[in-house]
Length: 481
Image (cartoon, rainbow, N blue to C red; front, side, top):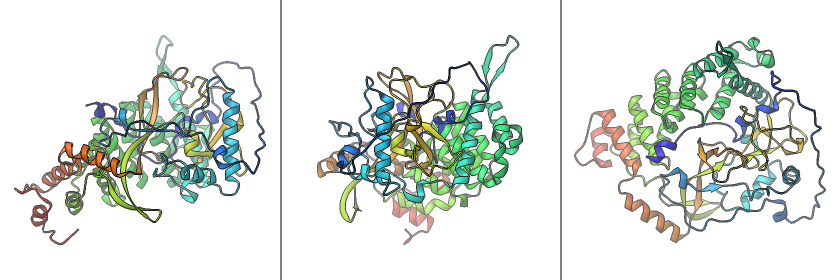
């Protein structure tokens, strides 16, 4: 199935461009001598009376047809963007710097002022799981540790070993994770990250999980099997929850098995059962199936009542009455995607402003008319400081990521990274009716099928009626919700 082929995890917990940004840390190797070129700087005078619409990016053109509410083919999932892209034939660096200048202008009164204004004026972005204020900011010391760990992770990815003939050969996934664990366990092995000695073990573990889940979200099966095995060795609640997300979102059976094997050594109080139940209710059928399989493999008997509750709930994708901004509306939860490379400013604040702490990870916004670097984490030449974003402020955290083909991608690679989120979108009566029609054609909701499978396997029971009421009688749950 096409979905099976595409579905993969990033899982977790940090920004859309974090994995791209190791170029902000100087490389240990010098591959070739380059002539130093002073980066360009830009100054823009923005009139305080400028209308808000002229400070926000030009909205993308609205799609002509309604989205496919079933969301079972990830190629058909709606794609969201920051705005209309900068024209290839323009001075793309200057135009990008001008966008950052307008963002900084709106952020002067409110540190998140630009994003709040953008969401308020863009119906397509409303309902995304944006974080604001303290929730989107990483403590300075942790952000500095995070930057060092990302640098180490990317440096290892760039390392090569040589065979007897001297031909370069990429480091194997097994060796990679062995070396990465060694660096984290003993920072003295790498002088470039010796400051990690100042961090506590808990800080290193937390930031390592955050970094590697971001970097290896769309990577090869072998690397993500190693990722799951590494997470198993990390005694931190974030590692447990990251394993649970791999169990739900990884497309490859080997990755899911490694994640589940790791969870078997963890207490369910660390939150993995809750994440698996969220997977049952995720608006993508294959996630429900995988979550149910994980609950069975882990013998999660403490979720039986919750599984029965799923049987009385509508399909996770069905229209529901909700109160949003004080008004009762009809809304749907639907999967959407964002091109990881083209939308840095949708998820991060500019770095060319006062108050950016030293040694936090920053990255340049990729320019559409310049090739992306093929080196791990890099994006080409040294860019103007006026087009850098900061990763210690992160407004969006994706559920999973995967590589997808992009048409007319030149000069960028054909395969590019997309990050996936769940958006809550207000719909019209006509849209709600169309959604209900699509779901009705499908029959029994996949979430119900998954919940019943988990109930049968966990209890060894199979009531003839197979209804919520029958399951409550079997499990002696009458009256419990």
